[in-house]
Length: 343
Ligand code: NAI
Ligand code: MG
Image 1: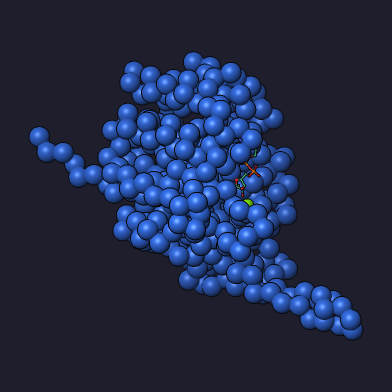
Image 2: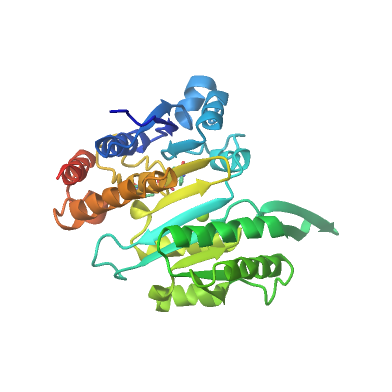
């Protein structure tokens, strides 16, 4: 019998609850037989303490080599000159797609049976932040100007990502979200290009389009009409938080940052310093991010296995951490998932 070669991957445990939820996630990945060969690297405060940089060269070099990373939350130092590690990673590895699924895992919230995916363009739009002021009289900030940049290539790339994702995951519809009635050039090029891409998937994935403000209202009135949403950077930032809110918030929301040459998977929540070290953090977000990582690495079956085990642990075994109204520790919940994986 030959053993499949291991897949090298960078592991950044991160700060606060990061090491706790990372350890839990690695344990379930091991139990799944996920063939990742972890290269553990520093990031965040731990890295500042060790080498004086929240994103050390060794960590960058590791991701450059593995092209695949699982990252715990990193504390952003306040009042220092350090740039956001997340922004640096996105730019460095050209992670153009931000994938944020929102699915109801624990019934009894405001909405039942939500299952939608937001695909957000991660590098362009208004977030290029080409900004400046014009002074008038004695007010240096009298006028603020910002230019957004959407390219046809960037729009095509993110639209193709969304439609390919839909095909691979058996999703039925992609909704293109824009504001082309007002921002005719900036979001017009996105809408026009995304529609062209949609035509190539005709017969496989349906599509429609929505103006962003109407979409925001529809997400509240009837979120079930949406399947995959693809949109530009700013709108995707806002709508993906809205979608996380529909399914009970941060603790259940995974995220993936994906580029042509690298991908980084993470929980949406931060380092939760208020509960760090207490063993009560909910590891579900990072486990779900790991599920996305499995799919990205071509192991869709293992992704489904992991998601099913999490679902059973939460809803059949009723093992829930405090943030979900339960009393389980991180360990208890992890053990419950492990037991379901072994069954
Ligand atoms: P946070 O997400 O860390 O915490 C917000 C609240 O949610 C806290 O009460 C926390 O206890 C709770 N919470 C978060 N994750 C939880 C989990 N897995 N289980 C149970 N409860 C959980 O947001 P906050 O407090 O605004 O940020 C803390 C630090 O994290 C900051 O330095 C921030 O910059 C950083 N951060 C890092 C992110 C990343 O690396 N991707 C994302 C967001 C924040
Ligand atoms: Mg955001």
